[in-house]
Image 1: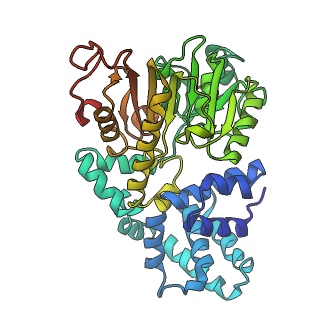
Image 2: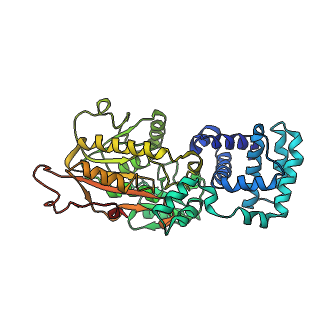
Image 3: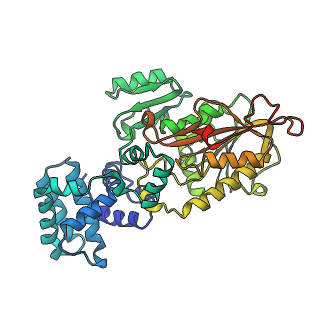
Length: 441
C-alpha cells in the first residue's frame, strides 16, 4: 500500500500538540498495512524530535513561517526516512517533494528538494552536530534522571530511544507456552523464553500481529515482559476475590483471567478503553470479569462492601519507563504533571486500602522510573498506615528501561496485617519496620 503522505503530515502535527500516538493510530489508520508504516514513521519522528528540529534548522537558510508547520512536518518525516535508509535516497526525496502538492504548496517543491539533497551531501557533518540522546528528551527529565541515577542516566536516555522488542504472552487457557514456542519456530519466528515469566516469549523484531500463529484464535497477546510481572507477583490463589483498580487497556486483567481467576472486578474511568478490553476478552475467549466504569477512589460509586483478597493498583503515572513504546510521552509530559500524578497515586492507595481484607495483599505498580512515584510513594504510605508491611518478592523493586529487554517498571507488594492493634512492626516477623527509599533500589 502506498503511503498516504498527507495523512502522515497531518498526524505528525497533531502529535506535536499532544495527541496520543495510540489514539491517533486507532483513529486514522484502521488498515493494517498503512498502520504499520505510519506507526514506524511517527514513532521515529517522535523519538528523534529534538534532533530533527535541530537538523531542520541547520538545513534551512531561514526559519519557516508559523503557517508552514505542515512543511516542517514534511521535512521531519522525509529526513527520518532518509536516516532510516530503508528505501533508495532518490525515491525518498522524489516522493516527499511530490507531497508538496498535497499541501497545495507547489512553491515549496524547490525548497524541499534543496534541503533534502543538501542533507544527503553533508550527512556526516550534519549528523555529528545533532548527536546525543539528550537532544530528544525534555530538559527537566534529563536533570531529574541525572539526580536520581548519576551513574546510569545516559544509558536510560539511550534505551528510551531504541525500538522495543516484541514481547508475547501466551494464553495458557488456549495453548501451552512451550507448544506455542514451537509454532513460532515453525513459522520462522524463533523466540526466547524466561523462567521467571512462564507465559512470556520475546521476539527480537516486531511483526504484524496477524503473522503470529493463532492470533485470531486468542492464543497470544502483546505485553511487555515487565508488565507481565504483575500477575506473577500478585499470584492469585483459587477462589480469591481480586480487584484490578485501573484496568484498561486490559493486559494485566486478561493475564489474571488466563491464570484462572474466577472472581475479578475490573474498574476504569474510561468507557472507551473498557470497550477495547471487552473486545480483547472476546478474542482471547476468556470469561468476562465484572467490568465497571468508575473512579476506583470513589468507593460509593462501585464498592458493595465486600472486601478483596488481592488488589492490583497499576497507578496512573508519568510513564517515564515506557518511552520507547510510547515516544509521544517525550512531547506530552511536563514537569508540572509530577505533583498532580503523585497526588492521584496517594489518593488511590489510601482509598483502596480499607477495601482489602486483613491478611490480603495489594500490588502497587507504575511504569515510571521516578522515585517520587515509586519508592517515596510507598514509604509515605507505610508511614500513614501502621497495618501495612512490604512483602518480599524477587520481581519487586525498580526496573529500568532496557534491562533484560523490558520496559521500566516499579513494583511493591504490600501486605495487610491480620490484627493491626496487636501486631506491631517490631514484632511482626514479615514486616520491614524501617523502610527507606533504598530498600526498593
